[in-house]
Image 1 (cartoon, rainbow, N blue to C red):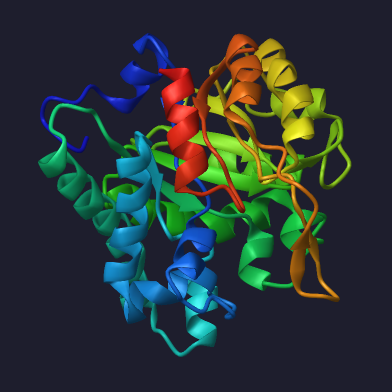
Image 2 (cartoon, rainbow, N blue to C red):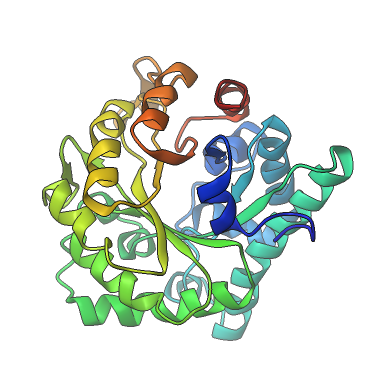
Length: 308
């Protein structure tokens, strides 16, 4: 926990009068501050190069009203760091540092506005995020569940040892990878949420959502399940399915609704993420609500005001 007075994350998840507000997209906040993320390590590069920038980004979301900050470890893996010449021990230090930077932001936020419980979620992206080739939005890597578990477990052990309040197993494109993650978090002593990236009523790998959510229904370690990094309309459909299939609190943090034009290297369309829309997610069972890509502090501030 961030402070001695704060309730445990799992307690707050089930007893808080309002849903817990998550942060928004870390990368867009860093880019807005002028940081270049055109790198295979994405925001994880700043763990070594500009850690203070990560504290500032987390702090912006806490000050906007978020109760949970998600660390910059989404694309931080031993394999990815090794490609950049970073050894195993230093990579482990950087993974642990991602949690500490979230804690530091929470301490600064609490110093300005004492009394509001704040939590840190340690992000763990899918196998495809390490590949940095877009396969995180396809799944079907050609690896079995055992191989995926062996990939995820060492990083999750390091993140868990840094004592975050919760592990965020996020942007999971494939039910097979979810099976591996359910196994990989067993015995770590830290609760986790698992959120799929979806398209329509299926995972990115094409499995029906009922089947995908059922994978985690019986896991004691997974305390919330849902979706992220998807269109807001897809979240509308997914939240009630996750609640019905698992009986667990639902986590939901979609993108803004804009679409990336790779040829023009620009975002197109109008945002569809609104605080008003989040009321429907809450009514359908969501207890953790925030935003992902292109959702910034202003949108989170509006969301926090509406939900509280």
